Image (tube, rainbow, N blue to C red):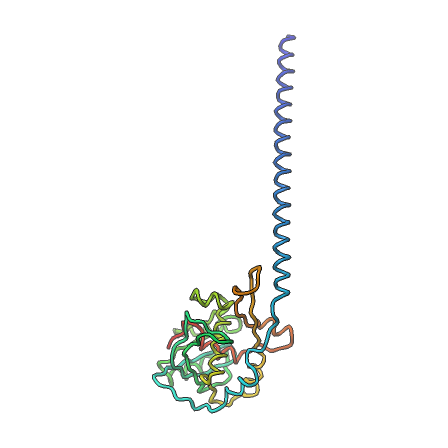
Amino acid sequence: MTMKRVNQAVNAIASGVRLFSDLKELVSNFKANVRRNNKANLQRNKMANVRRKNNENQPKYKPLFTDEIIKKVYLDPKMKLSDYGHFIIANSKYIAVVAVQGNTSDSRKVAVEGNIPASRKAVVLEFKENSAMSIDDILQLLSTYPEATLIVNDNGEGKFLGQLLKKNGIWYMPVHWGGNCFSNDNRKEYVNKRAQAYACLSYAVNTHNFKICHPHNKEKVLKEFSSIQYSYFSTQYSFGELSRFKIMPASEMREIGLDAPDIVDLFAYVFLENTTY
């Protein structure tokens, strides 16, 4: 009986030793995890501070279309085109018909300050308000220009317009210009497809390759052109060759009291990479 109690006591002590050893290992692992997490948090905070400091050093936005460039939009609009096609471009508020010659470059650099431009020329033939609740105007224009490519911004307020077109079996090229460019070269140059399109539009206006024949809403059009601002933005830790061309988002424009450029956005659709007629 005494030996049995001794064995029980020994087993209890052994179990206690194992439990203590397990607890010691758990505590050790917990401390190691805490140290690793603290080290990772310090590294993340350090990187965040570097990014914050880098963003503070980003250049401020500047007007993309200067007064001298804007004057060229309506100057001598009788530009001759050969072998041209047509775009019918629409969003929830406006619709336009644009005669187009040449293609946009999906791999060549197109920047505000130099580099190789896209070869596309464009003339706005018709331009008016559009009702997203109806596709009558679009149907009428499609009958007038049966071979035209229909480009539609079906995001946000234009979603219902896109649904109406699909319901009636009308094919269109959607605009998703908040995403990355298709070509690798353009991805290196531009923050998104919107930046690429606006860079091409700016070059076309400056070189007399974009004209507006229709004087409708001219004052608003010119005001929107003057409100577009750009910068070179870097998401890396160093600012320089990795910086990319960026257009001020509509949300930031509203924050400083500027209206969203619904009309000029419409014209920029024409210069999106991979848009064909």
